[in-house]
Image 1 (tube, helix red, strand yellow):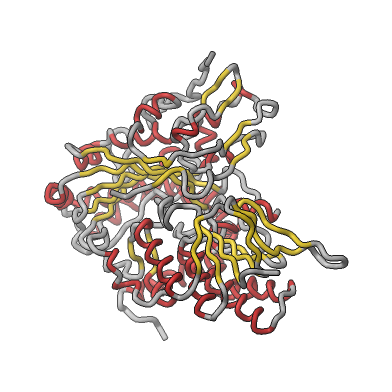
Image 2: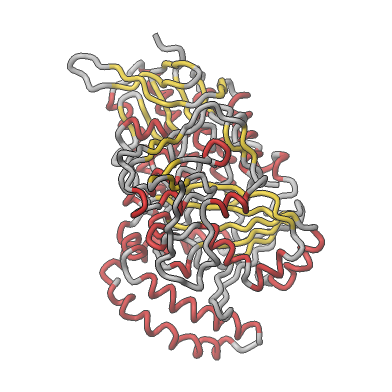
Length: 456
Length: 113
């Protein structure tokens, strides 16, 4: 006899969305979280998405925990430096109007808020670690999941929604998921304390008057195993008086280089601009996390079994291009909960109903970003060559702009620098069409964001 | 007795001086909080471990939880240092690492400020 209608495993963005929607639809929901309080174990997912979040959790934008956060008066800048300190690509996003849809959050505050909303809607929150699935084998039927085993006892329900993240033990037990080091990015974060006013002064020269964010050289999906592009960036938050130094890279590349990530971090800290920023700052904390490289290559073959649905990172689902996943998880969580509600209404828990969940999320924009050609180009193709050339060109651009050169002369100076990348670009021509399609979609989205309006 | 043979394959100016094992633990001492755990949630199977020819868990662990002991990897310091990041299970080429989370309500607490 089932005790609950739905068990949601994990109280992150995906799990809380699922629990809240299910509870609102009058289902009896149990949400399991292994940390003392939701968000306790999380350093990542620093961006949540305003529109998606507000749709599921009305009031999200105005919640208390946004106060004093980086989006407000915060400056996020990234660079990569050559050893001779000649190259620089840089970001300055003062409160970033350019990325209005993204909200930077501290997950140990936001997750708690999200979980509270789910509890207010009627979900039950329990601190327990789910370690296995409970299976039911009936004659003539496929085995189905009927509950979870935890360190606080067994819980039964006709529907289990697994939102327990990248290392989901349940997903592995289900047999749907098995990943290698090319799927995983390891990230560490050094947190420094520094007086807010001092920080503001130091950050002043980096503020781009246009307020446009230039992302540069950090994404492991793009940069492959070239250690020159190991992701490294700083986020300074004057209002809180803290600076985060974040270093991350694909495990497969780390294995190839046989280098510990702290080794790279220590190198990064020695780079002049980082040194200048951190002078006198106190190293107070270190955080750790593994991230999902969300490309289709590593997607689980399917997102459901009878009685079981996977949400977000648990199935490796994410956004490969932007390297975000919280929005994907929230949308999937919502759809999983809606499917569960339909099942209860129809009293039909057949496999076909669970298959509907997959159909539903395949219809959203989530798969749009996943163009296999793009992934192949990024990881195996000539993309690193292109990145290297563009790096050179960009550093020239930055230098010339700082020295007030005119734009035509800048263009003339950087065009030849892209020439060595031509063969790689030509080689990729076969896969250009689907990539261009994605680029167009992104561009029109961005235009709309800037208020330029779409062409409709 | 611990023996360390790890050498960086290609000395590169893109990395700082070698930091692994004990040096990582030294660097991170007091920089994060762990609620005492009751059982070891990570185990290395010594029969599967290929030891000194590999050393990957020892090299890559961001908390220095692993140590090479008698030519085999062990999760020697994990109870005090492991951050549950999960990297080791993907790094091991022979699947010698049995990985799980610690029991609910224990283990690392991550903070922002």
